[in-house]
Amino acid sequence: MRLFIPLSIQRFLWGVLVSAVSANLEAQQFASSQPFMAPSPYATDHQLNQGPSQAQLYLQNQYSNRQQNPIQLGVPLHQAESMGAAERQLDITRNLPPLYSQSRKESDFTQSRIQQVNASQPAFPHAFDSYPEDPEYPEFDTMTEPEGVYSDSIEQLCAESCWGWTVLPTDLLYKSYLAGPKEPRMALAILHEKDIGWQMELEAGARVGILRYGSLNDNVLEGWQLDVEGAGPPRLNMEEEMDLEAADFRVGVPLTWRRGAYQAKFAYYHTSAHAGDEYIQRNPGFQRINYVRDAFVLGGGYFPDPDLRLYAEIGYAFNTDGGAQPWELQFGVEFSPIEHSGFYGAPFWAVNGYLREEVNWGGNVNIMVGWQWRGDRNNHLFRIGLQYLDGKTMQYEFFNNSEQFVGFGTWYDF
Image: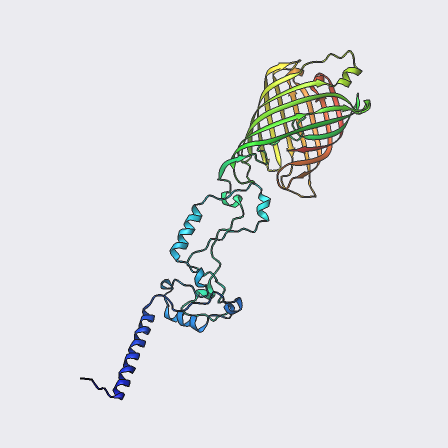
């Protein structure tokens, strides 16, 4: 038997069925926690600056509780990320050790600042600045700059409390004495002595750091450091066609310490004196001596002001020859601005006293005054100025002779 349904009833039933399906789809859409539409990932900056679209406004009204909406308006879907994953990445970033580059100048030119923000903050906080305030989303207009941590280098991350190992540091914790006559450096001085005339005092030497355990902040010189030093200061006689008069050679291994305004040094050095061949030929009756010192030195310094240092040291030679005696004493004061003044430089002055047992605790006083330039990438010094020395000679082959020098010099200190 075939059921016959009038055409009008069939149309009515089809309408009811279509309405029911539409109502079911709409109910599922409203019950879902995911929005059915998101901004296009290909939206231009101009479109973003015009404010949210009608579809975005509709989503804002439907999802008044932002914690239930994992997609931020104005962010392409392929860039959306869950809050939990972002927070886990933030925790991992905080636990990573900071990268360290010893050259602080390189970090000044590197545009690599890291900004830490909360994962719940929109990725485009200014995308809706031109849009009127929404009572449900006041943070779009009132959001302030996030409290982030900006870091250029290890200086800001570590301050002065972060210590570690540094191989071949570019600076010294215990600088050589500026007026010390036997300190390793590069130097050339034209000096006049009242009895022997014009002399050229040269020095080819250096002092460098090998290993440091101390502050990783280049602006904070603290810790322990092992250095090596060496120098060969010859004297040329300008009155005798630049003949070599004498040359002293020195090598050493200082272990230094510094903390705040205080510093200390414990060092070993070896020095030996040699007469020049030309000098021996001009003075046939001269009896050469084999002057040798192998000594330990204990020294200390204090900075009443960052630009001013007071220092003193005592040395004891456990091996001597050629008239050398064990004990020696050195002390002085020096003014050397620590600021990097660039091309203009700054004035300096230094006074050093050196007493030795082998000359009945006599010695010499050395005074320098002039202008200095400090390196931008390190604290090396280039100095020019006047020098005055009075007392026992700086050349130990003639250690009993007294001299009085005055003249002009240039010095490069490490």
